[in-house]
Amino acid sequence: MENKNLQSSQLMENPELLTRDEVAQLLHVSLSFIDHLNDLPSYKLGKKKLFNKAEVLEYLNKNRTTPLSHKISKTDKIFKSKEDADE
Image (cartoon, rainbow, N blue to C red; front, top):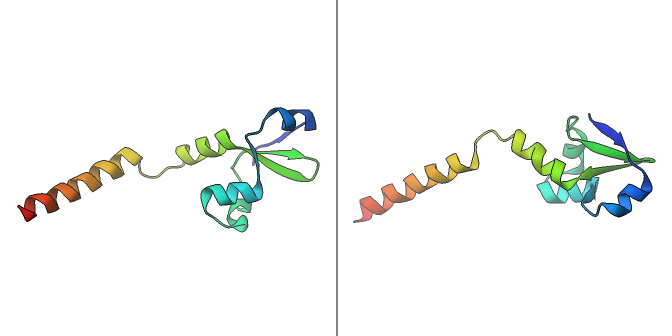
């Protein structure tokens, strides 16, 4: 896991830092799921673990199994097939 030391002054300068709870809410997963993501970049401020929102979103993008554009085009094909059948 990538942990970086963070000074309290940096915390005040960066409002995009999220707590474990906020990351879990953002991703719609449980706290235990967040705890098992060992390669999710995080920062330590004392005993508190914080996450940079941009890094969390980048992590999701890097670990995407199917590109969103592929899913959209596949869905479009399904809808087009149904529309053609209805005509």
